[in-house]
Length: 288
Image (cartoon, rainbow, N blue to C red):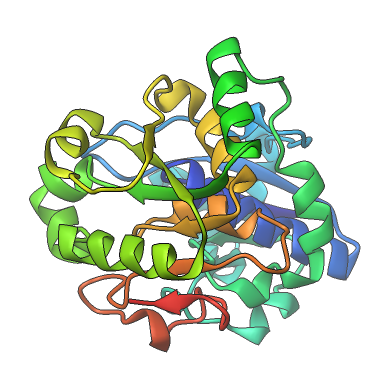
């Protein structure tokens, strides 16, 4: 059995679950999870209950067998000739596919974000079924879905939140500026007839005040952190996508199974990573 650490927001947790599912199926070994988010600036919670999947949490005994957390537990391991680090598998580099992932020893505690498409491509068809919301859409979201179905819908996601309010996170990630969104919308409008942009954000008041374009726009503003799965369902239902440097809108685009979809992503994914240089971005996606 493997134990995977879940951490971060819903997009991060989806990557961790997807990688665990791929490893489990390839090796025919079950996995369990522990939600243990070390990010101290924003309180996160477990989000996978919203989706059509079954996740088991590791028991205290199972965690003690693969990840001694307390000081006395680590000392006991060392006194009995066991190295606590032997069963701890850490991701080596962000956004870089490591084929050795699929050789992780049984019984390991696995920690990392695992944000590279090659970890999960082998289970794409399974994920497309499992990563659907358990519940049907609310009345307000059903109306938006109807608008999406009746238009040439393009999702557009503007990520702010802790990318703006937390200095450490802002330094690491930054935000996509309005010039990026203007170029992306113009590009889509040149390729798509009668586009309608469906706008998603964790700071909708700011977006409404700053996103001024001469295109039809629908602001999807009825959901919050507890109903983010509703946003994900609507995003993935759109024909095409303009994403932020965000794992959340990455999933909104990736879960769209249309063969002719266009996805625009920012050239600069983080302060250290260009989207063309990382294993996260599918080759067919357009970088602006």
